[in-house]
Length: 150
Ligand SMILES: Cc1cc2nc3c(=O)[nH]c(=O)nc-3n(C[C@H](O)[C@H](O)[C@H](O)COP(=O)(O)OP(=O)(O)OC[C@H]3O[C@@H](n4cnc5c(N)ncnc54)[C@H](O)[C@@H]3O)c2cc1C
Image (cartoon, rainbow, N blue to C red; front, side, top):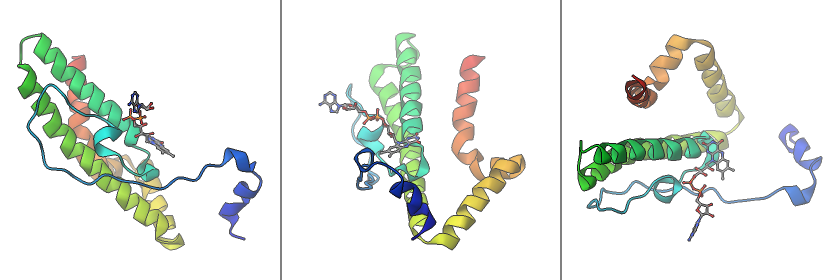
């Protein structure tokens, strides 16, 4: 028996739940209105990236900033929501793509899995490499957060 099945054998069956992996597909922008979407309602993804909830929170944070701008008279409502949707669609579906890539990698076999995990560990241990690999995904958001705090 494969070693990764052993913990399953030692687990009570009524605590195990099987579910299908599902993912959304990119959609073209729509005409913005006072109704919008965030989180899994727009960009659900497989759990393979472990980032669905993080991206949902990023949506909430961005939408919140846009609504504060509206309240402070810096933008009007529909352009602010459009601005939110334009950014959210870009990073949201980039995350969907990443999670699909991780899913395929996880299902691709042992060697691919070990290589992928090894690379992520290396990124974790070598900050310049981590920055080079992940900076395009997180720097904009981090800068916005830093700007907000200042
Ligand atoms: C196995 C698994 C592991 C995961 N691991 C991670 C992880 O490690 N890290 C991570 O970031 N993400 C992870 N995710 C993804 C994460 O759970 C989701 O991306 C996140 O919960 C999405 O949040 P949401 O608020 O958009 O939607 P949801 O959490 O689905 O919330 C929607 C809510 O709306 C309610 N609802 C639905 N219809 C109605 C209605 N008609 N009226 C009123 N209420 C309604 C639902 O009951 C639900 O409570 C994982 C997902 C799975 C399945």
